Image 1: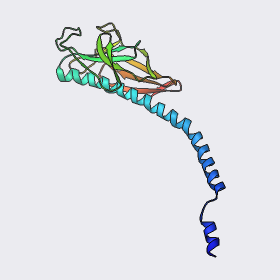
Image 2: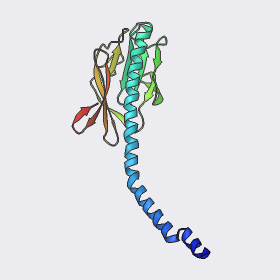
Image 3: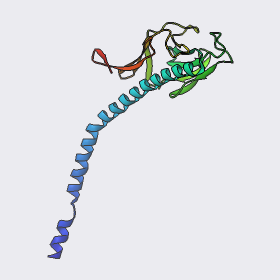
Image 4: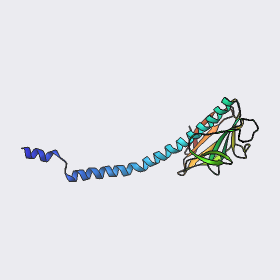
Length: 183
């Protein structure tokens, strides 16, 4: 009786191999969806980070009681935020540069700034060209926007997010789903 109990207590090699085969098959089916999920979350994080930088520029303008500009170099997929401390409407050594997130770059048309993640780019913008001849958002010292608009970001897999800035200073993020923009 003891011998029979021992034989039934373990798994056979065939049972273990079948279990490994089933788990491997399930893993192969799940991995592409997981990878797609990771890419989707990375794109969403990029859009949120860009919106955070808009809010940073808006807050810096209000806190310093000076205009703050957010300029976009769409050819380099980079942007910068600078506070016009001396009110001369020109970036110089007196002015302050700030931005958060992404990867820092040495130059965005002469000012340190940040790059978008590798698989993300600026697709289009409706912001007018500003002081530095780049698409720009100018936040007034009261936090309002002198020129509203939007910027569309896309990734290598076709996902698109739009960050809008209204004249009242509202900042929103929309995702393109099918043919329409949704929050």
